[in-house]
Image 1 (cartoon, helix red, strand yellow):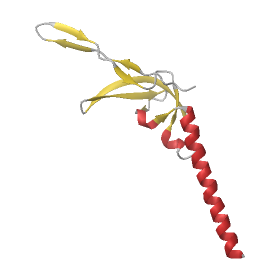
Image 2 (tube, helix red, strand yellow):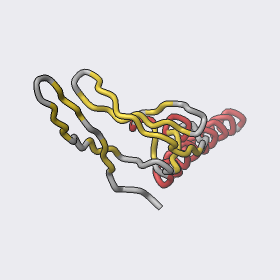
Image 3 (cartoon, helix red, strand yellow):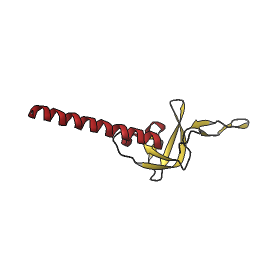
Image 4 (spheres, helix red, strand yellow):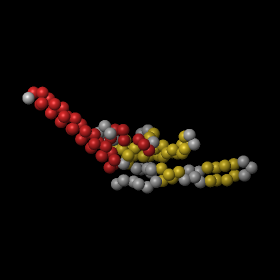
Length: 114
């Protein structure tokens, strides 16, 4: 089942002559425990399932970016991951394209023989 909820996390502690805490909520797409697929492999027809173990927020060029870690401690960003329905659609598109290419190749060979 697709997970369309956004989660958030963050905390900033400022201190000088006084101390204050400020919560910053940073939305991110997938929560810990989500089962996702790698988009790069799905576009090649391979469905590789991963489970999100940890989410860390980093500050990159003044933009907070969520980094997702799987159970093997590999790091991914949101663009590298997709939900099950997207992965199946990408893999199906890959195989339909391959079938089309093979069909065209067979037709070209048959037309040369005749």
